[in-house]
Length: 206
Picture 1 (cartoon, rainbow, N blue to C red):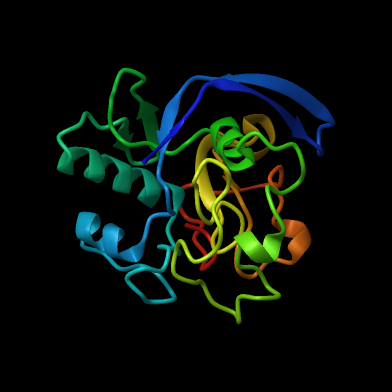
Picture 2 (cartoon, rainbow, N blue to C red):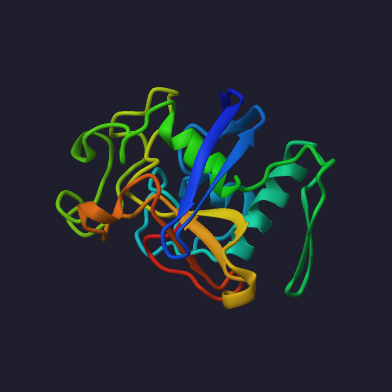
């Protein structure tokens, strides 16, 4: 895990033409995307379309991602953050276990103090349509950002904890970062997508 310092970030929603500032408390974020090896060790399941121990796990729903967090918390002797009853999910703010980052935390960590659309030239830091050969790649092969986080852009999109727009999309959750199938313009720090948390899964979302 990497220690992410406190700070502030300016967020925006181009669809709604909104901007807002978020204060970020210190938190820990995994140095690499969750690998298939770790996912199998914790869940005993292998859902990914592209197989390989060091490849990022993909083809997982948001619900499967938070179930993984709970199981990993149990494995490490920590209090799980989520309670799940079918499609009702509650988050325990007092729990010390593993969780998904908020969208603001994810973007703040991805930027690592930079202000541009990417923290470095994309070919140096990420796998996307022009260089991926149509597949995911082992985590950590590209250069990290300034805070030592790998594969934040490209390879696979990453589920975040937040609901996108409850009034319009109901329970849809946000994912960030772009994936191996995306054009260069899709792999930028502020890009945000959303989908159904209990049914949507695809081979470039982990």
